[in-house]
Length: 291
Image (cartoon, rainbow, N blue to C red; front, side, top):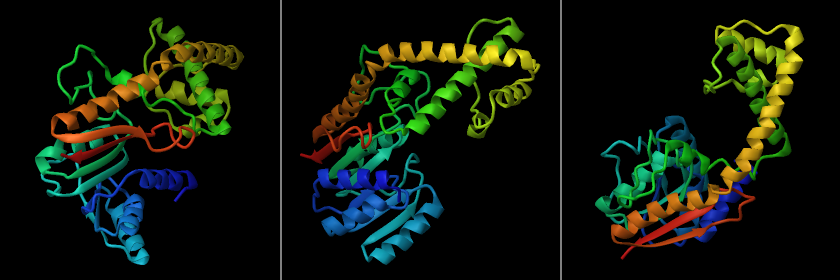
């Protein structure tokens, strides 16, 4: 397990408090969090995940650790997934539709306690975000929810340079695409393989042009297009400073929507941080106990 992930799990486990109830580890992968809680809280843990290979590996790790932990291969978004009354659910960085499924099913399933650290709020959102706590005047789009998780305080300098290069090269290609199509509007890209950004800019442009059925720029145009891409990348980053000033408030708003839903369903709820942001910017923790 990577050191940063281990530290996040340990910080989460040190912050949440056991309820004495059996634990369900929601979307738990290999069950690293569940295994630690089984050891610390001396309770049985059931880890749910949709990947059979991860569940099999986790079962082996649990057996070696000698803890009371079992694994269930399940898609938690499908009704009928085992979620019995009187359980304590934990979820560390379950993506949007996955943590929302847990929150909405908590009360109907009779969960006694929840500790949820949300992540990737945009996953499963199409068009406009549907609030769980009730109708609101504020309209939040799928792009807005994506903005809430764009902070990259944990990225290494090499990763930041790679990200900047990918943005600049895509924008350089966009300049070429606009010239070729005669359309000056921005169009989004299909996912670009990371390996395409590891060669030269010329190689990147050739691959992109072939995929988009465009002529490959002449070698004499490459330097100009790359400079244009970097110029636009700097413009985008300057604009993002203003946009990202709203990132954390938006993330808190999304977490509060989950928390208020649980309060409306009869839980006593706390919203707090389980670690400092350098460890992970997704450090919000929703703790709920059935009154």
